[in-house]
Image 1: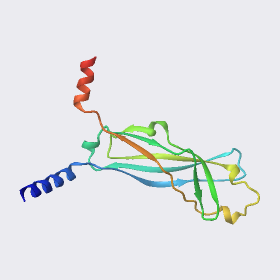
Image 2 (image 1 turned 90 degrees about the vertical axis):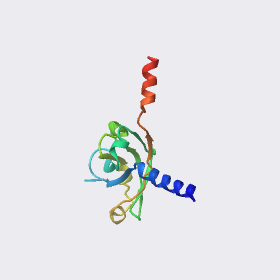
Image 3 (image 1 turned 180 degrees about the horizontal axis):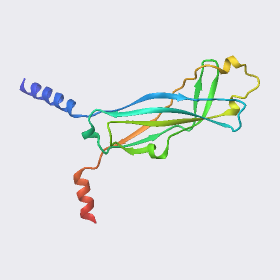
Image 4 (image 1 turned 30 degrees about the horizontal axis):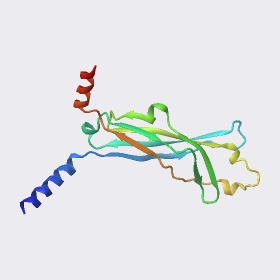
Length: 155
């Protein structure tokens, strides 16, 4: 009975000691001011991710790296559009957590030529396009004091 009680209290203590990093969509990707007669072949959509932590002192200096697929698809339930590329600014692809909340911009690039198809009616083009992007997020813990001391000794 004592062993079960000790095991149960240890599980409760360990569950409270872990911190959590949450990543959610703050603003979905939107393509603003899309004009099919404008010059240039690329249309850029912009969205925002929110990265937050519940225990900043535990997550401080943890490193996050974002990776995206090469291409993707979006649909308005009438027509599919191919997204040529997903990207972020280079400073946001890889960063360390220094604050409790951070907003990161994400961009999607679409070719205007996919919209300019003459055989498509306007009703099939209009509407809200939705899609899903599999984002790979790598998390690395902050360096420990022992590792830092070992590096200094080797120098």
